[in-house]
Length: 115
View (cartoon, rainbow, N blue to C red):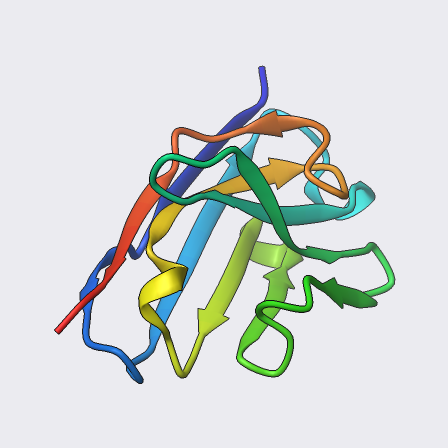
């Protein structure tokens, strides 16, 4: 069955960087668009970014220019490089099999941006 395991979250100061990873199994990784969504404290799920099978990418306006989504099909791994982090980026980040946040999700990894 589909398994998505996120890692790389943690505590970081404002302006800092983190790289999230998501290892996928149970499906043909390179045949699917993949994405990231997040859930900030007290809020619903928010779409963050997608990467398609041709490596085209799309981003939410709130993260455009600061976050970079990428994939390594040989390793069945999805990444999210997060730079210039802000306190409002504090959230649980989930990897998604599919685009626009629609599809199977992992259990998430917590990112806390705080001084």
